Length: 322
Image (cartoon, rainbow, N blue to C red; front, side, top):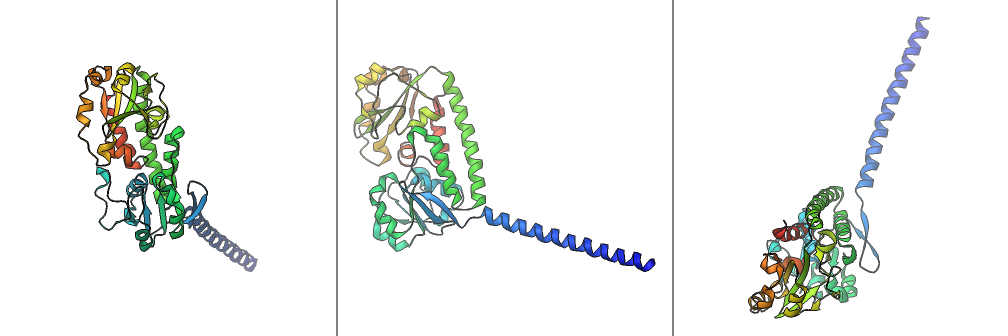
């Protein structure tokens, strides 16, 4: 009987030991599988026309979309950018690493310079779309377009797509940043939704003035931040509808949001003060009540849709909130 009991005990110990080893092995296997799921080797993005599969963690990126460059920097991967158009950068991007090489202008890429960098990925923009086929011959090329009719959702989608290039940690940080931005957007929107003030968005350009409607390139102001548009019928176009001082006076907005394109691109800005000091302009409710927001022009005109640029854009418009 003692021998039988000893044998049973030995078998029990063996079974328990084996089970423990199996559990440990299964746990390690599960962790390995989870890691494999989390860190992808490829992601599928879009080039504006078709899906493009690209390798994650690209070491050398050429970027023509300044908002995307901004997002890459905020996520901690600016050292992966090897080329950009450097001639016309918004002030907040002037401190980029000196290792980044010039790759032409924002509208005309230097194809030879880009090819010499041997990039793993090229991020084009709407301004360079006609060069898309040439860029695709050098490296996988994508465009993160923005839908003006669904501005914030498309911007946040782009931020997530950019983050997916750099792995799980970057994706987690992107989600935290998006959540923070959405909270800031809501604060501004809540104030504007309670207000009865009507807003007109104007752009100065080489001595001329144009107006933009609620579904224009500056739709973020109206769709997300909830500024209320005036009742004026303004044609939505990329460059705005030409506007006279008489027209501005007739509309008589409570708030004027002003963007100086000339200043943004380094042009002749000598006529700007003349426009702002115009007598008809000064007769509007917006000027009388000190509700004219002069946007940071290079930020809004050149670099929207980025993590940091969106933060700065929100700060810009908070100046007149009550």
